[in-house]
Amino acid sequence: MTDGKYEHINFQEEPLTSGEYENCEFIRCDLSGADLSDFIFIECVFSETNLSNARLSRTSFREVKFEDCKMVGLRFENCLPFLVPPEFRNCSLKLSSFVEMKLQKMKFVKCDLQEVDFSGADLTGAEFVKSDLQGAVFDNTVLEKADFRGSYHYNINPDANRIRKAIFSVDGLPGLLGKYGIIIK
Image (tube, rainbow, N blue to C red; front, top):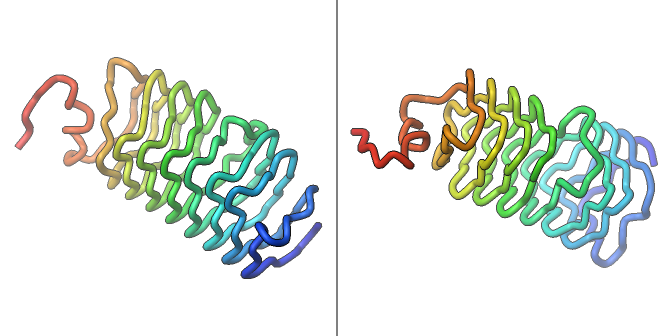
């Protein structure tokens, strides 16, 4: 499918046909719980769409943008590797997982990333702009040159992650020093 526009479709009632979608728009659709295994999305935009708990086995996202989407509980590590990482703007990705993925220069702008697992991921040069990272897991994660300015509620152990040249706001220091029991006022 090329240049398709899908609006207000509940794909639980009418499943999306398996295949390749190029330059398509998904606006206010419900793909929650959908099996998107082996689907290919190229230069697509998902806007105000619910993809929560969708299955992403061998799913390919190439130059895809997600805007104002609900994406709870997605296991992105089951996708094919990203050649160009997706961009997330104002999305809820609670409880999702990017374990051991290459996510260099990934953009998360004003996203809810509570309890997202980034263990073992390479987030070199990633941007976390004004995003909520409460309970997000960073363990053996490469965060070199990542930008956390304006993001909040993160707790990152500098001893368990590579953070060389990462950028943090001054008010984010408690999230870096928490393990040391230091009080910052």
